[in-house]
Every structure is written in structure tokens, then in C-alpha cells.
Amino acid sequence: MITVPVPAQHEADRFPAHGWVWDFLQPQPPDPLLALIGMFAADGRPDKIDLGVGVYKDSEGRTPVFVAIKAAEQLLLDKQQTKSYVGPEGDVGYFRRLTPLIFGDLDIKGRLSGLQTAGGTGALRLGAELIARAQPDARIHVGTPTWANHPPIFNAARLHLATHRHVDVATQRLCFDEIIDALSNAERRDTVLLHGCCHNPTGADFDVTQWQALAEIMAERGLLPFIDLAYQGLGDGLAEDAAGVRIVAAHCPELLVAYSCDKNFGLYRERVGALFALSATPEAAATVQSNLLSLARANWSMPPDHGAALVRIVLESDELAASWRAELEEMRQRIVAMREGLATIDPTLTPLAGQKGMFSTLPLSPDQIRALREDHGVYMAGSGRINIAGFIPANLNSFVTALAAVR
Ligand SMILES: Cc1ncc(COP(=O)(O)O)c(C=O)c1O
Image (cartoon, rainbow, N blue to C red; front, side, top):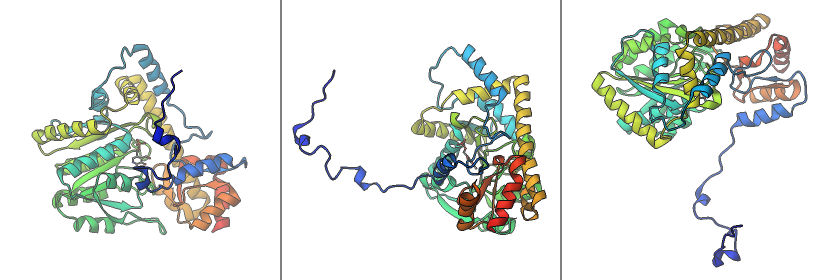
């Protein structure tokens, strides 16, 4: 047994009233969604409904592993010979296979750089740090409401946030005029954050005409688009959900795309993402790449390998890719069916049928959200965000009844 000698001066006072460094920290609030998970688990009502957690669930309430991913895991298990380091760029084959999925057949060769990241979150953080390195006082325009983690990520990278409305939650209206107004008044070289598809938390996406208008204005005013594409395939389809990225890439010389495979490949905990950077010239792309590699080294050195290797294996195989596409399409159709079901039962929910992806935000007060939870067993985020994948055909009516009771 090893005995650790305790220095004499600490013996009488093993736990001093004051520390050295941690005393300067302030307590941080816990993630409210985690508290919601705990409350939901503790609720014994059999007909409770979980609309809080941000993961896809099937009609049995499960978040399954894709069949193609299971098969890829078996292949990886059988074939992988080493767990040695990859490199700060991650799995290059993974990155290469993702590129056409996102950019289609756009001619951007030589101007595209990028790397595998630790999830879409890592891609957002690395992209923000790249911007801050290029322009220490950079400003980023963000439409609200937005994913709750966007502001902390951009703040952590020391970008200055400028906000405008994306959606008027009360009326469920996309505030396109206000978005255009914000971009028309933006300064040259400002960054613009855009959700590529399946806007989180409102589901309010741009149509192709609106993307066109946004791309033109960003190109004309010299703005840097930063597109967060975390749900490709869960809105209108794989190619359709990338239309915004492709339109912007065709108009703007520079562009960042933060990509996540965590939802559309069901790999959440494996942390599978990528950051794509478009530059005006191949020379600039090489400089961007060298900066991305050095930023990655300082953040996580190299990204986790397993999930990205699985995505690569799936995309390399026609058979596994077809299976993945079919399963993703099934998930997408289930979400669409739940949206249409809600809109059919309750005309006040009509806007939900036109919104895309897993999330919508209902105009509910904190009291109404509490009453839904306490009196009816319906759990949702305090913002009124609901996860449409939390519905099954059998609970649509009871949800609508509960909603009517608290309104
Ligand atoms: C809009 C948006 N962007 C990015 C992410 C990050 O995804 P990941 O889990 O891959 O970090 C999420 C995750 O919820 C998201 O909703």
C-alpha cells in the first residue's frame, strides 16, 4: 500500500476556508433540459409525453442505431488494425465522402478546405475561432430564437453577437424582412449565421427564393456566410436540405459550413462533425487549411475516430449507403406525418405542417408550459420548443386536448 505523506502545515487545517483559484469562479446554472430529463424519468404517468430532449425518437420512443451503422461497426471491428493517432484533420476519407453530399456537383475543387471535428459543436467553435483569428473584432449576425448553444460558442470564441428576429414566435411568422434589413445594414466582412435546414428551435426554414436573395445580398455586401447544417435529410430530403448551402456557395467567394452527422447518422455520443471552408482562391484555401489544423491541435489535437470511420464505411458502400438513406427517409417521413397530424387535429397548429425538421416553438407562457407538465404530463423546454419526434400517432389527440386545456 502506498501512503501519501500529508505536509505538516496542512494537517491541522485540511480543508481551509479559502481556496487559491476556484474561489474566483461563479456557480453556473445547470442545463435546464437535463433537469427536464430527470423530471420526465421520475413521472410515473403511463401517458406522459417527452417533447424536451433534442434527439430523434421512433414510434416506440427509441433512438435506435441505424442498421447501416451497426453493419459498419462490425466491419470496423473486423478490419481495424490499429488505434494509433489519425491527425488533426481526422478521417480524410470521411471528409471527402461528405463533400458531394453537401455541395453536390458544384465546381469548388481547390477552393475547399476543412476537416473532421468533434461534432457540429466543434465545427461551430473552430469556425468561430478561425473568424476571430482573421479578424479579432469580428461581428456575427444571428437570428433569434436560435439554438441555445450558439451564443455561448460564439462568445467563447470572442465574436461579437448582433441579433435580429428570425421568427416571431407569437405568430409563427418568418421575419424575412427583418433578416434582409439586418444584412443590408451589416458591415463588410461581418459574419452571418444561417441554419442550413430544420431550423432549431423553430423549424422555420428559407425556401429556395429566399436563399437566393440572401446569397445575393451577402455576396453584394461582402459578408461571410456561416451555415450550420446539423439536420441534413430530416427536413425535405438530403439534396433539398443542402439547397441553401449550394446556392450560397455558388454566389459567395468565402463560406463556412459547420456540419453534424450526429442526427442524420444517429451517432450523437460519437461526436461526428466537419467544418468546410470555401475560399476565393486555392492559395487562400491552403492558408485556411493550415489555420484550421493549428486551431484543431490547440482544441482537441485530433478528433475522435470511431463515428467518422463509421460514416466513411457507410458512404463507401453502395449497399450500406442505400440502407442509411432509406432509414433516414423513414425518419423524415415520420416527422412530416406527425407535423401533418397535429395541423389536421388542431387548426391553431397549422404552421407546424409547413415547418421542417424535429423542432418547432409554440407561443406558450411559462405558466402554460408548467401546467402542461404538471397537470398533463407533457414535457417541453421552457422556451416552448417541442421535439416533433416525441409524438406518436397515439398521443397527438391527448397533446392537443392538453394544449386546449392550458390555453
Ligand atoms: C442547430 C444545431 N447546430 C449544431 C448542433 C451540434 O450538434 P452536435 O451534437 O454534432 O455537436 C446542434 C445540436 O443539437 C444543433 O441543434
